[in-house]
Image 1 (cartoon, one colour):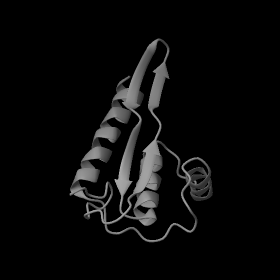
Image 2 (image 1 turned 180 degrees about the horizontal axis):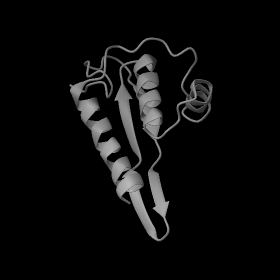
Image 3 (image 1 turned 90 degrees about the vertical axis):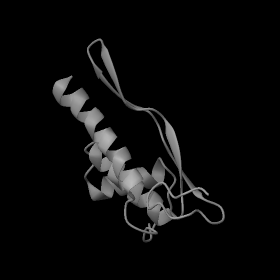
Length: 110
């Protein structure tokens, strides 16, 4: 069975799809790929909001109003967000950890 990309609950019915474009860090002639384009299936819009907010906070988008507008206008999430189906799963935590590691490599060590 498929699981929600945020909380890990079993997906029942039609999943909510969340897509993120690739993120590249270009420093002179060196290009670091932070993440490639990916899509996740989530159990509800609350989980889509939770995932979207956290991934954008990792890259410095911390303004609540700007973040909310970005998720609505560019990712097509409905407003109000609603509550997630659960807390971040260990699998999702590992995804965020690998993204954070790539950001450190690109921005600090790059």
